Image (cartoon, rainbow, N blue to C red; front, top):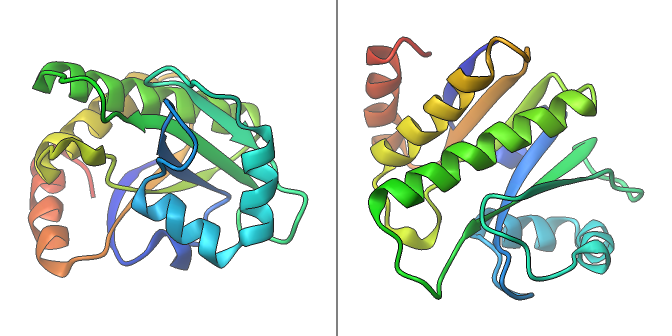
Length: 173
């Protein structure tokens, strides 16, 4: 069981599941990775869109098992983006932490061993370090109950190097 920082795209992963983030207040407010997913697998995204019921509370995560061809057995959709209300840094970190905990619980329920995700910093302009620490806190809160690997993909090599150093300083890989 590990929390790992990897350089690259979540779509290069061989994980069982992927976390896609969205703004749960309205349709069409998806995160960048979610939009990329919708372009790569439009039929799967159409299935998912037909199932989403808005509004979705902040921090809420739901799971979806695609019927169409897709490299991920389960899609975890996390409502972590928020554009209408001003939140303080602590609230932002709390939402990311809680959402990752929820994603891990759902992954365990679906017998998932590895989850791929981007850095869950959302549209809030959280620093990469703050987002990773919030994710690490959420991960640590679940380690006694669940045995799931979380692979955090960072496409930019400079940010990957910085986060790798931070992860190692916190005891992660």
